[in-house]
Amino acid sequence: MKSLSKSALIIAVIIIVIAGLGLYYYESYGKVYVYLSDPGNSSFIAIYLTVTSIQVHSNKGWMTISNKTETIQLSSIPQFVASANLPTGNYTELRFVVESVMISLANNVNVSATLPSNVFKVAIPGGLTVKSGSPQYLTISIGPHVTETGNGSFILRPLITVTASNKPPK
Image 1 (tube, rainbow, N blue to C red):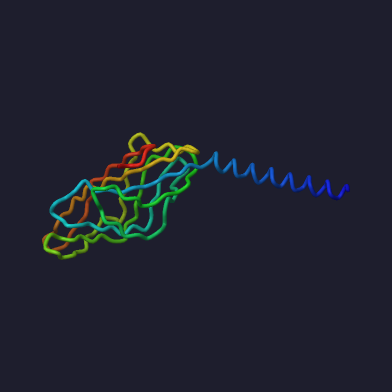
Image 2 (image 1 turned 180 degrees about the horizontal axis):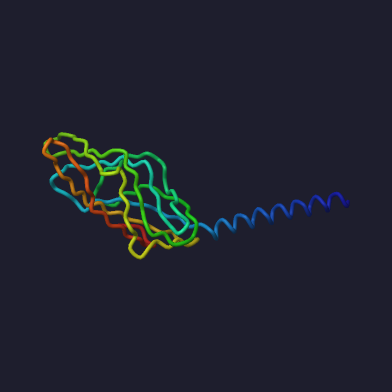
């Protein structure tokens, strides 16, 4: 009988520890969703970004939201790109690592464009405060500023704004 009560006590302790760890995780992390949009540019049919990493910065350093390589067509309708559970706290910057840029011109020709440093980084106005149980949404609006060089090459110098909200974009 003593053996049975010891076993029950051990099982109860294990359950309490597991429940405590789950509660700690729930209280220490919050969900962040990332969306991309393009305010519109009539001189191009489409702009495609191949993104290899999305990160946010806090006083603890850079935290990865996604390392998934994905090609995204910029659109006037905000598109879901990635989500992650991040430690609670305040995040001040956003960084996208871009592998390539492809532009579809009005004459149905696709051309590659370069993005200086293959990274775009932007401050989050007012910061992004991640709280447990309260999802946060980052909407990145990329106003594509494309320059054609004299030799037929294109350079993308995006005008980027970031909006942080506790509601999904529309």
